[in-house]
Length: 425
Image (tube, rainbow, N blue to C red; front, side, top):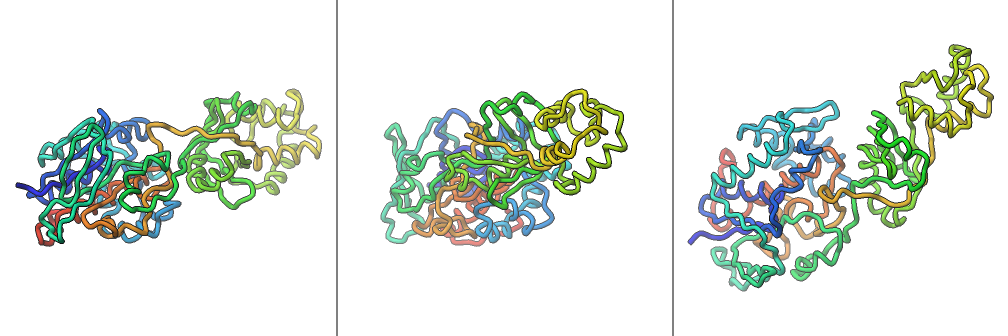
């Protein structure tokens, strides 16, 4: 009878761990337990349905800069499996990835179904057993007297069924509430309290929300009272602000914003090539260059027209004012509106399907080279269940691929008492 390797969770990390373990160790019986009736749900919705598989980076040092939490842990892990390995892995299975201008990588098909089909096909090819509606309620460690060939774990499902496993990998993603980690805490693992990461900023009743749908391709968003800031595209929504610049800042400041109960101030520089001083010089020159033209009709900075009109209105500039007539006081106010607009944020909005948390199983208790628990041999973790989270742009998926691949490679080594030929990995 084959040794049993159970993967808890049918998401990106779970499937990647399962298909690689089944391929590396044909002598393993690999089983995926998914608590819902859906598989790979985050993969399906990622990148607007295109699946942001990973991010192009020149090397591990650059890659690590995109993980607010867990970078030192991943430094060791990425030496085993990093971005180039992900690209090669999918290419070898007929899935080519393309790189967009901002470095994000998607399947050439522009469809997440390509990635889903690849993983499902691999599971079928290597005989991975998939069980739906199988929610794990508890994991118990068995007394095996040190025998690597004996089942080490008893898994109890929420419907009362019991499963025995020689190895277990937990890949359930991040939970929004610490109480949901109770079954892992019961194993003695420390849980870093979870807080949301990658969320949008709510600005109730702020006039800026009237511009919903307006996108600025390059802006700087800074958290007031800190040095934390991010640059990138910014989207104005009916509830506030979103887009890569906001999402990245929310990730960097996840714990600080939670401590502030999501009530804080931000500054937005709509023109990153300027700051308040040199934009003021530019405005003074424009008073002569565009002297006879009305300011509302002549936007010299290339901003979306609705945003330009909004900024002028917030500055108190009448619709019929000419550039030559702009008073000194309004020049200063306009400079501030363009390079340091201030907004009060009161609340956040998270994406349910793409929910990302900062927090999870403490990294101090996991070996970064094997993903094995330091408390219970044979128990592994991969993906967002760990206290690792990345910025938007494919970095959370890369964490999933990396940690899952390492867990897969480690899962059968001591069972079969053999090293694996890297050419088969």
